[in-house]
Image (cartoon, rainbow, N blue to C red; front, side, top):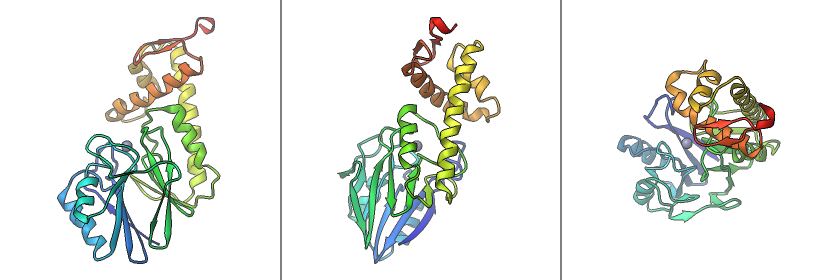
Length: 257
Ligand SMILES: [Zn+2]
């Protein structure tokens, strides 16, 4: 198995250095993961790397705009299916993948792992002890979370499963997966408690919480932080630790005020 990264030209505060497109090659066959936004120059670099190999398909980790929109056009150009968990904005899978679906590239098997949390439709792709993580785990930063309970469960699901390498959708490779997964879990638990503490100290809106809890984070990222805060608030509500978690208004349960 040979793994190549082709970096898309979409750097920014939300994407780091840009989206990592991954090519998996084995025994004359190739699969493409996350071709990114529609960009003819990036498409040409991918096609050049595919070369004369037999492509088995274009795989999508999730349907965010920095990962999926070029999947259908690239798959059409290669004459292969686009694979993903579900349709989304600018993406419609030709073949749907689910937990425990399997694909083969040459002599290697790709196992599909459903990892909801960052996005409900998020998949990771595993080959032996190597995992392609999309935005579930990134190189060098935490990720924005839509559903905190699912996200924590999707981290726990990967922990202690013998992984030795993570290839993320953004940033550099991760060579110590369990240590990084433990950091992610600890980081989310810490944010969870910090958010509850901010509410106890008088924060009454999502913006109030972001100002307190994310005071050391670049303000350009505060709108993204607010999405993770809302996910924490929903989980705090489900846990009965706050009384309500509308998108922006909440209160402590009466007995804990
Ligand atoms: Zn994403």
